[in-house]
Image (cartoon, rainbow, N blue to C red; front, side, top):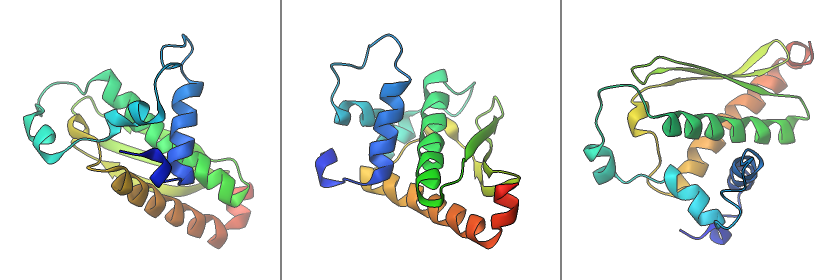
Length: 148
């Protein structure tokens, strides 16, 4: 995985977010690729992951960071503050909302969080870009609500 081959703003936002939330400096020596590696999960790895029990706190943190990076990109493209809101059930399913003002710009149902991840960085970017486009469209359609 080479981050330079995918200079997408989503990837850069995700890496910045991970580094910003590293209060202890544990990730200072890690490369961007190493920081993104937990987000890359092959199909074989997903099959080996158990579906029972509570999702691991590290997985929940990755979900939060992914949608946080999407919110950052939405802010960059629209100039409006966007806040992610996650409601995750302990069994690994739930809902994610990205809110701008009083507008729910993006709503996403998540399931099988035990297996959260993407096969490649390109798939991560593709999924994030789809969510960003949905959010930008919503905000452009209802700017007064997003400004409220």
